[in-house]
Length: 605
Image (cartoon, rainbow, N blue to C red; front, side):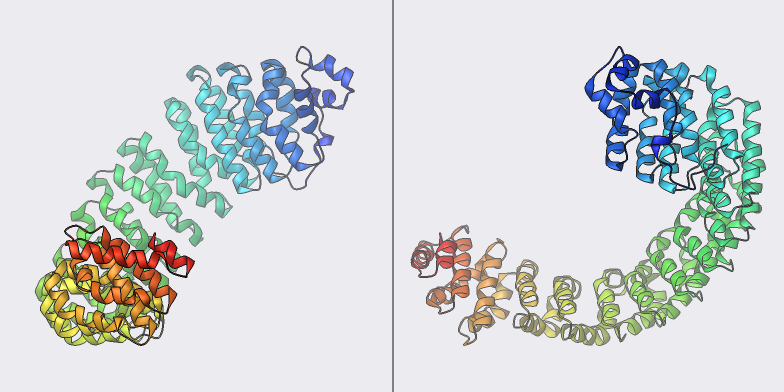
């Protein structure tokens, strides 16, 4: 067993044939390195013990070239011992070493000698730095794949024993990862050793080892029969479930998912089921959070008749947990829960908790609830929605936090499809108007972007009665991003309600904006004409605005003339133009092409 480095030792102190070759004069090196006295190889070999890390990194990245030049026998006898003696270098160097060793099986003599690579990889798998260990374990896995079946037992078992019984906990952590990788290629008798080491690691005195084993315990399920899983792995999992460290218990969900997915319903009940439900009531909020975060996966692997009622009740309690992080995690899974649990369970366990979520003290929990709570409506039905869910939604619409109201308005579709929005109009419309007048312009942009969605959900009549004034108001906002979003909305409105609606409701306002004394409304009208001209559903409105647009060809503001040029260019490509319209557009572009401003001329050509 080898301990991870506790101090950095210079590679110059390493010994062995390779180092002797490096320390010789050039003439002596040519003798030792024969029959491959290539200057480039000599330079790389020399740099393996250089003072500068960059030089050592460059050399080790070409270790395959060096090994190829040395040949398999000298690689095993000189290069690998040299590497093993320099495993107390910088972490960056060790990571590169570990990665390169995993690709060298063909350079040490093929399958018969691949196990020689374990000598330098073993101390790297015990390194203190996590990334070094992970790369070393991956390289060990690659090398194990190159070891033939006839040699696998006598090669893999000693390696795994050295790690599982290592005096340093870092080595034992690496063993936790490798057990499931080695397991399928061993015979029944050898597997008993692995079961023994697995049990020992579950009782390890160092919590990170138990945590690592817990996270990889489920990997063994693919190689065991259901009866073996129940008799060997479930007791280990139960023991880890009683661990005093919550960092270990937090890892339980992953192996539970694997074990439950591999066991029939008859073996899921009892210990495994009780262990799973215990996560939802654990004294540590991090463990409860892990259950809330993965409850969808747990529901899918457990038998529905066995687990759904119990899981739904536990999930409902987590929605009102004392820790905000747990409530937030549970709330994020509300939408997926609606697809798994029957209506009766949702009404009994979930809806009461939603009433609490709507008034949660944490802003980010209410914001999450505003996104997901409406997804319950189709699942619980119209009656339960009207009686239990609508009061929650009204509270969210009246929330003091603008983002809560905005999130709710953004996710109205499930509620609209279940009960319609008529029952919410008295509260919904004031909320939309408050958001439209929010002091933060980004909030106003968000609500403007929701305009087409709201229009589609409430229909033309309700939109004309309640929101059309807002659509016009947004075109005159102080912030350009809001005005631009409002102009883009015109295309969507015309696509839904038709050009006749636009001519009756929007055209007069746009014509008036073209004649405004302020340059901002004139600019916005040109922008709207350009954007509407890009869609066949709205181009007719732009053509009706053409006379007013042409009047702005002589506008004193250059930016407006630029927009006029861009709008006319878009309209010139429209289908179905009358000859008079084509002529007037061409004439306007020609006048702009001779403008005194270079940017205007560029936009017109």
